[in-house]
Image (cartoon, rainbow, N blue to C red; front, side, top):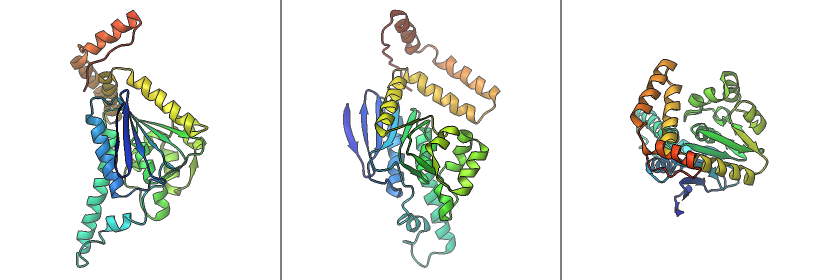
Length: 277
């Protein structure tokens, strides 16, 4: 096990090629420090050759209560700027702040390692932005999901509206976004926002860790290549996507991992993969 790394808003534990990124405050309300740390950590996970898969979860009372409304408006609206600043400059300050936060969340999606999000209790506002940027979502029975920005006079702008429709479908995405209402785990499962629901947090974490271990047991070269191919297919037509995967496998078919996988299967032993992207 690699030593635990602690930040201001989260901590990271790496063991057996699985990284656990843990939100470690009681309500995990989101401010600039939160977003910057999320971005930093997922860049580090992307670059760490010893990490094959990531679990994102919270040790707090809830997964996240969303944006810190006491701090975020001042940070985004530029109220700490010179009072004589023009409205145009204040608007530009807001725009730049939003795009920085957007990229921090996008870093989760762009991480070449699969990311499993284990959710419990409240998953509100910005927490939905984080969850929808992950590859797989699991939750407890008591989980509540809300695109809460609608209720506080904002258009959700950190990724939820761009990512949620392919997950849950057009009608349910619009219902969630237009109402800003609370949706329980049963509705989330019904509409494929989550892959599975568990009675307790202990069961949730046990299942997330089993899934992560199963993913980590495969060739990281293949798993990360599979993620890239899936992402490419989401934004290209079938013809282009088929050509892309053909090119991908043509480039990497001669990896040592392929031979290792076949030999290990024939000899009924655990493969020892050596290739990394």
